[in-house]
Image 1 (cartoon, helix red, strand yellow):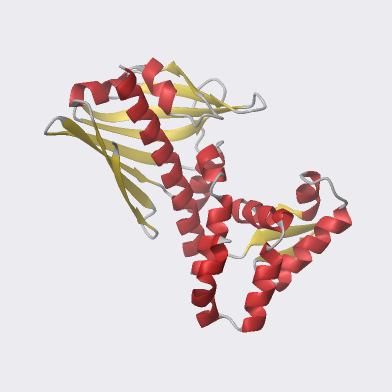
Image 2 (spheres, one colour):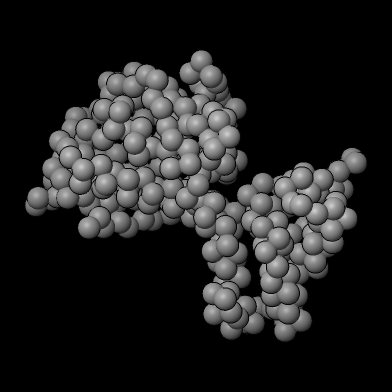
Length: 161
Length: 118
């Protein structure tokens, strides 16, 4: 079973997620490194991802797009800023145009990933840092089916505050 | 309704009349949907109206009910009436980060499935 804990900082606009997987570190690294595996999990079921260009080397850039239910495409771009295979990875995630060039209108989401061996398992810690709320909004709007399912729960939460 | 469970918490801050307005406003599926959309992004009444099989006037009435319950606010901008969810920035950050978290929970689940497959 996958254990997940999260922490969100409303002021710093960060989210940290810790998940424990039943696999060794090398195996978990592959789901980040191999674009064919990466595209099996990056996009929600309704918005599958296709990685056109991807390699985990410092300075390398990735280009991906996610295809929505009506065939619309949202493009994204990564710049790999640090790699310590198979234990750590840092990247900047931006929106992109259809040629895979980053667009700077909304800023960068900075992501850091660390993998640690933990008995027979691997603990993955992911931290995402957003520059501003509009950027986070855009990220959510980028076809986030899991988010949409929560719409009603969100209203409950609103009432609870 | 799950929302009922929060009734007591709501009462601490709101009068009974306020609570009645909120629950009445949220008792309708279209209005719940409008609130969810307006929280996600501010939009005009006419763009909301495109999403529902009902007249512009009917959508406008739904928005008015939500406005009285202070769940959304409405502002005239040129020829458009803009509807937005009534959330201050912290609430907005919290709502958005919740959704972002849900995305990553989905991703984590999918990674776990891939690891099990191989």
